Length: 406
Ligand SMILES: Cc1ncc(COP(=O)(O)O)c(C=O)c1O
Image (cartoon, rainbow, N blue to C red; front, top):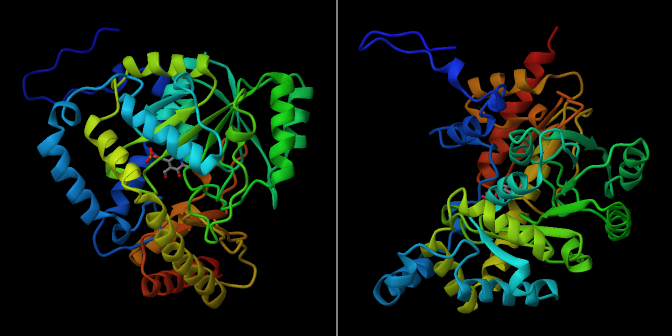
């Protein structure tokens, strides 16, 4: 259909010209980011690191040095797979923290975790392909996959994380996912950790059926005790692609991460990158490289673990102190979130009521890929002080009371 001719100065309606593929996309992440930056709001929305944790001094020194001595590389385009020396630094880093060094062909640098989701979708998914995910899961990944017309299947979790038997059942019913996306540590939004026996079971099933596992390790380093189970990628590099990001451990403004996986998959992600932003920003790559090579990573994550543990415990205490007895959550052991169930309350209504009291959080519905439940909410403790956490949860408690009042 030809667009209607409009007079100069008259506003044209572009909605009929948008790609059919994007119909129904609602920009929930844009809304979260907008809300998350609103002033005077007690903010429990967004997976935002605390600015206090940004290594500003170190980065300032490193950046000054890079501009002075490395401009020809840092300020230039890079290869689509990433700058060779930065890839080497990340390979070395993975060898140290994961006990396995990816080969050259197994590693590429991405512009962060969500970029890796897009690259995987772009290079692996045909319309109608099935992507299995934990239910609930990171909403950025859900919209990333559905944006490429994937059919999402949600798999339930219990205290040990993803219920692998449900994946077997799905496959047994004739539905073979092309991809399984999983967040094994401090899952966004539930905070759960996939147990070691489930990790083994998951790999066994996926290997047997040829399902590629996309392992998102965004919060892996932010466990409050520093203990860590083996990553899926280190256990099964033949059928796992690990999606890593420096957003939580370094700072999100750098927009930098990695994908480590089977060489054929990584090669195709590199092709997809050529057709999107071509390469991750060289300045960010060199900053990450200098940060890792300078030996700053371990001290940084040690500080973060303690810092976020204090905030997580403050939220746990505030939830206990203020919320009604029938509200459910698990005490966080890492990451940024408490996943809170409020029986009988639609949390979208609760979010509006809380917003009127200057408190922001994300209602749970967009985190469900298949069977939407609307009485959950994700409260992020990463960016609020202990006092703000207590005050914000008290205000949410009032909002729950007002919604439940007859
Ligand atoms: C599970 C998970 N993966 C990926 C990301 C995004 O990472 P990046 O900033 O590297 O795109 C987030 C951010 O909230 C996340 O929670």
